[in-house]
Image (cartoon, rainbow, N blue to C red; front, top):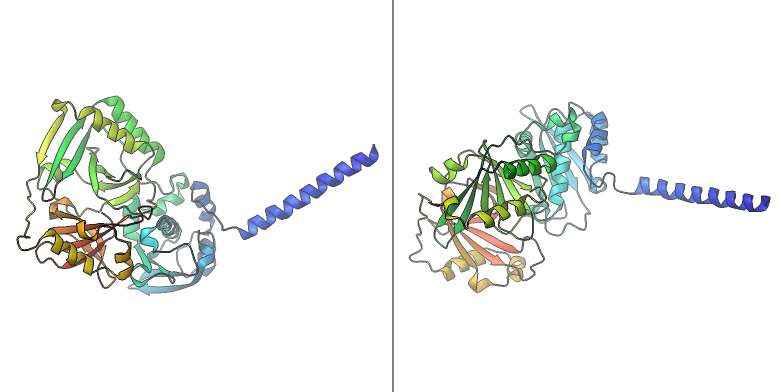
Length: 404
């Protein structure tokens, strides 16, 4: 009997030792913090500091960000009294086509929020991916832009870590207006639905309160075709893609945008992943309510899109767009001869970020434009289209949009 007891104890001790070694190995070999949540951020508050020149705390913060093992070096600088940190990454083999076009965008943005929240005087942050082609080699953030992404000073998260990454949106809603954009080749009409049902409004508010808006994993190949005006200074956009829950938040008033002069001045659209169930809930309202003509209003946009293409056929515009692409992009296209050609007036969008042919990031606004949209042969690659923006007045290439 004693021998059995001794044997059982020995086996238990052996198992404990093996588990201990395994757990220790996992702790010291895994990437630290592979997901970002409130507890993760709370654990980093101990390293908060006023300056990037506090090397000890800066290094502790960087060591606890995802992809930390790919950091090769950092550079610190001060420009007009504003601190600028540059972080270089190399060796991340999963990044095939640049941070702008894959899910790692959400990782580096999370890392940026952490740095701006914990380093009081940091004003500018640049990430360089040393393995990526020139035009997609870097991502740059400044404090003002980062604060706009979350509609608050991200340093607030230090005092409220449970709110980490939350977009600060007003959910005091009394009624909602839904605008559905219907595009044709040369114009856009907007259908309007008023939602006054208190139960529906409460359920929409709960979806927003409980889940927030996440960082978008990747960009999409299509445009926003539905806007939900909360009638409290905020609008939520839903992209037309059926394959994801990508949306946007913007400080604006739908009545001004769709029923006024058709423009949004000094407004930034913040792309977000919509709360789970939000898009389906809105689409259900639309499908059930639009059949009732009393609940539906057609708004003809006051701004017509001037089409200066009398001397340009769609085929000629497609050729102009196609010829600006590099060989890799051309090889991915499956519909070169029948790409989609769309005409947008400057009232159809507040502004658009793009990459010009020299790899510079530019803002497009106050222009009537043409979008030439090519399909990719491999539909599983996101985005599954390649879009080119032309100036409608000159037919010259403006660039490749970073978001449509």
